[in-house]
Length: 205
View (cartoon, rainbow, N blue to C red):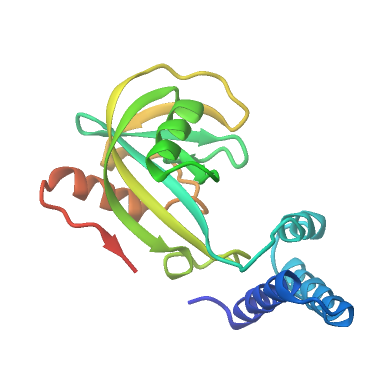
């Protein structure tokens, strides 16, 4: 369950961002800027995210606020799934990340798989679209939709890059330490379940 203070801080941020987009009166704009600052102060106080980083990220957000989209590729080879080792925490995750603008879910999955794991893939079907806050207990400052996409593995060879330090295939019973901010063990298990069931129906919150 999301903590109440975090819910309030995110709502304040959304109100401020919308107000800054649509307000014309300079006094209203100043008030919305103060509301945005307050939301950032709250998040900075109760999370591990640097105040400056929070300010930079939110200050760059414009328009009506909507959830961010995180796309993850579930790439299978026989009975194993491909994971990448994240440089940021030295833990493992499905290849993926924030969806780029002007790029479809399909295109994002293909791009992230190649960039992070050196894997050429063919996206096959959506496994799930989850509201992040319903599946995590950390104090994350953004509203996020996590999209998990099953992919057919064509070929690949890991290439050094700025985000990951390794890429390997793992069996379900031998998973490494996972980067829980990106994906949970239950979500990895769900990917395996979908792989085994031809008639698996996508899940969503």
